[in-house]
Image (cartoon, rainbow, N blue to C red; front, side):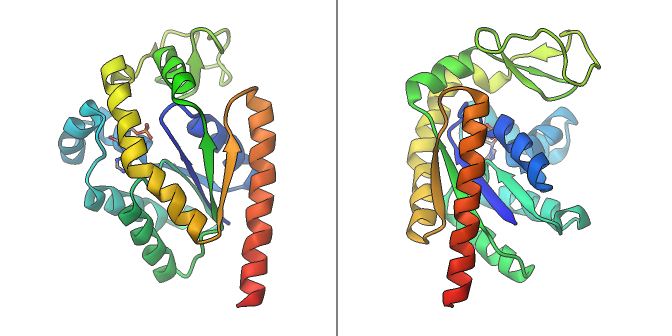
Length: 226
Ligand code: AMP
């Protein structure tokens, strides 16, 4: 199975993707994490993508696609991938389609995690992430009490540079302009499901599982009719 998880920044993609990938035995490939890995290590790629990330813009498609290609051609991706935050443009979606075809793999479908802008802004303003475990918390909705990995006491919590109000507004505008059409792209292809991303985390997770089953059934029906 190869699933795509689409959603605006703050929609809960990262949290839900980790959970779902673990349950389904898929590797979790988050394009934002791939970029942050380079940023943190001051690599050449990290230096060239920083300017886009700081502005809340998308990194150019060629760099993004090359990085994702490198990750999913590693042997651990053979068993299936949960893509988180990729594709974010229609050109990326087309490139992913070609890449998967070259690799002899299929995209099962795309889940769009829908959250209102008002809720997204509130979530991002209070988001804190553990630098050690990458676990996200929220000062109000999910404050740090204990670390799920038991490796720290909250001393590694930080706010992402791009979670400041100005960059958040830019990232949301980018989402509506460039990524919303990706949702339509997969909807038109008949392999997209929308999940309401507001409410209790466990309830959202249950809706995601239901959407995954629905997409699997549709994929089977499509291949039987082909
Ligand atoms: P995220 O962690 O998914 O919120 O991504 C953080 C930032 O990384 C985004 O604001 C973009 O600058 C960049 N980025 C992540 N994924 C992509 C993508 N698929 N295409 C272009 N830029 C991306």
